[in-house]
Length: 276
Length: 358
Image 1 (tube, rainbow over the protein chains, first blue to last red):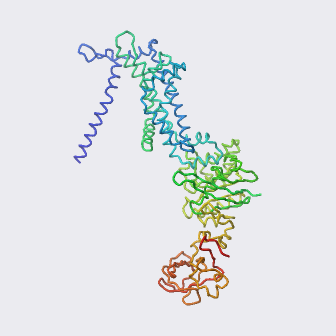
Image 2 (tube, chains in turn cyan, red):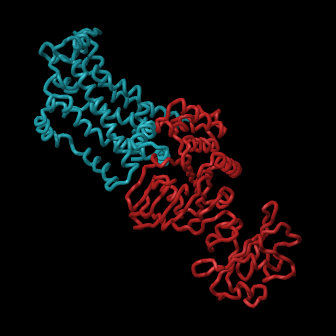
């Protein structure tokens, strides 16, 4: 009985410490974004709550905050949808059809995904210049699809391989084409997998910094992480309150998505972990 | 005209471990329109592969498949019609119902794929569900159904579009014994009523015998015998068929066990070299007596009851002979009995390859 209690206490303390450790910076961000003076810990400064930081950054057109946010959402959403679509086509072929090199594809893709991003960014920049895609959505969407595809494919593979191929054969005899089978039978059954793949690619793309930094030049394509990093503020000096307000706004979409779909993301990841 | 004709169909696989494997060797079969045709064989004999080749899920390595008067697969012409163009339907061992669809949508699926008009779909789904007595389950999902109900839904999905040929791959083997027998009868009735040409794959010889108008026995990718259930039971082509058909299985004895000189066997066994033949006798054809006429003596090692009759295990010269008798009289385990049978009931096989000697 006493041992049980000690265990409970230790667990609670451990969890509490971890939570504090992980969340404190974020809490600090939120707090700073909500006060008038970021130096409120100094004795002569008053702790005064205000929403001015938010209204300032949202209304100041020269900051382009909303542009960055829109760019991020569009680029990430398109990349997530496209990566999931390609991954589901590939996963269907790999799990259902026989062709040479069938098992090599996911492994090669996995190997590619282990390349450090920095190692390709130089050439990627040249390529995008050649294509005229610098500072465009396409210039970000295509690299993001490539980056997200291995993850999406492995998640889809683990889901698809759990669906009996007898369903495919039944549908074939029922007259369906392969594309119809994928669309009407396999994808609906693997919907949780497709959803978690799409969400993870979305979050990854939303947070991506290096490519976005290199391949964009202004508000027409710049995404929010780069926007925050290059934030200059309205009046010269480092505008902590405004900066933190922007940070809070920028994490909202991802937090919302994660909150709504957290169960499914965890299921998708676990399945990948066990099967992959 | 035949409903289905298989002409020298072969199927080879190349596997990494075992190299080239011949699943089917030279299969020639003809199925009459409207008949119930059973492919019977032990697991691994190629019967499911053959069914898949008829359906178009797999392609033959050689030979032709003809359905009606249309060549649907021909290895020499490199012509392989897709399943959707063959107009065949199939029921799988696992039922393969689409888990995310209701019973209604499962049955309607082939019609929707064929872009049938929705009023017609509704009419036909309801008609089939009445025939199969699943009309009250149309809104249920497959997971909510029992094995027998899933079986009916799978069958409904197969017959709803009135296919030219119905293919069934061990559809009853996942059901429990009682249900299997009642579904067997029902399947046969439905097949008769609809007049559907049906090919049925099973490893269960009782199922094959009770369902089939014609039965083809397969082993190692070869057709051993084709005939009516009565034919293959009473006139087996070789030792394999003789042993595979019938419960309890046929007794097979070495030719040397019978005395060549026995006057009652003068016309059959005596003409053969007894060292090169095997003798087959069905358990039901064996008569035992305490001290009557007979070919040899044996000792009863076990009497087991099958309900209406008794199965006797009798040890004879190191071999075990099975005999089914309706009345054991006062025989007991351990007793020595005389074993007799009618020489007309004896089957002779060549020891070398199991071929029947007539």
